[in-house]
Image (cartoon, rainbow, N blue to C red):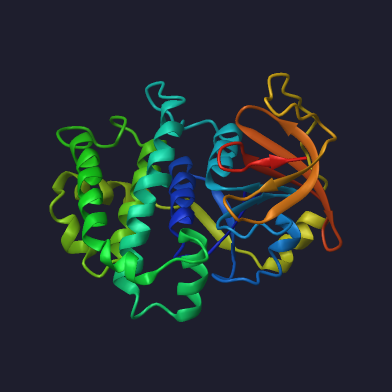
Length: 305
């Protein structure tokens, strides 16, 4: 197996995005199933409190957020490329649409539809995570048809893109935009009671989704959470120091910082190892695993000294 360990759970939509990328690359990887709800006692030693799913581990190097995970997979395994036809750069801008407005629309539809059936503990936890601590279920239900209206328009963009003789978003071969769009169709179809019926109005998108699903997730084997911790404990972070002379915050390797995981999210503390316009990596220590590095994207993760 490769060194990739993915900490995830099967129902996680964002994990599905990463699993599809692993399939596009044809990679072998190891799978650690984590709890859907906190506490996550065997994940926290690796992440310093970061709780979102998925997390990728390569020995003692930890990658948080699907953007950091996918970028590292592409760096380590550049072939086959996620950017067929020379599409570097633009798919990441697309990601801030699919993971932003469109993701929020889909999440609100699933919540409105599942209010009576979703376990209360899960409803409260994910509702607070996605909508804020004072979220109102009545407001989410009332917005169901507006959210469906917006999803319909946005899925229409995708349907147009994969109409005709284009097999995938960028042409004949799959790339990053396919993973970015597919996981939301996968999630809506699986978690919205009328999802399959809703998707029938997008025949080209339906056929495209079947082609993406057929790619699979690569080859994986299960790994226990304790074994993953043992792997981290036996290794050292591999990242070298990297400065960014243009960093607007003036951060430098060695600075003590806190990385904030979104609005109201956890603050993960450590010392800066490397940073660029796209990433920041910090080093921290934990009693169970020793030294680890954590890499985050720069967008959506404010950094404070």
